[in-house]
Length: 347
Image (cartoon, rainbow, N blue to C red; front, side):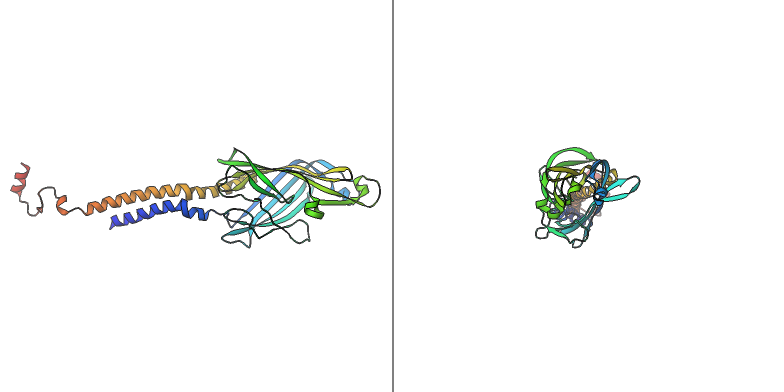
């Protein structure tokens, strides 16, 4: 009975060892449904257009040595199910000052539904973004990855969506030279060339001020277009697709009437606390995949093989003829063997 049990459990373990990496784990390789992460990025020596002078009707002026911070709270919201997850990111850029409260520069709420298997934006479900207080969400279909990347990445290019400019770009693979918490990361770079945003985003891509504010002669308002360019460096843990480190160099200009003003020029870097948080998430997800695809199948395979061998050996021994197990005699039972006969056989 024990031999049959060993054979049964050994066979089951071997079947599971094969099924885990080939059938079960591929079906479970999905973006988690419960996403909750906070990202903070700082720029210590930025350039920024002063808002207060504009409020008072003074001339446009750009300050240097400004401390800026981007903070994003990313979490999953309904509708989220077994096949897709909706991610919502509430993002704000603030001007920091040691003597005053943070001053809001940019804020938006972005929502996108992605396929949990591929991490791609779900076809037929446009993303929705609110860029200004009081306005309705602006639906826009997108193709690029954004907050997470696919599980099991390759050293190749991937489409990328930049929510700041609403532009599609390409994340070009560069190298795998960086290691964080023992994990080797893939380095990608997105270069978005200088682009006039007015034809793309409408009124958000323009700024109208008095001629005096622009330093121009005459009266009335003059409209300048916003031009945007950026370089985004991404370091992704390839097994889990988790974005661990991100740097953002962005420049926004106001251009019109033969003049140009720097609106924002900043080089943002993730804070150490944020990197520690994203690295812990990547390590957790990677460990689960490693166990499902490598460690668990090996353990089950070895255990199942030993149980199967043990069960077969025990079963074979248990089915031997009784006379094969007798130490003496040819078919005689121990009861039938007399002492003199035994002595004669030994002699």
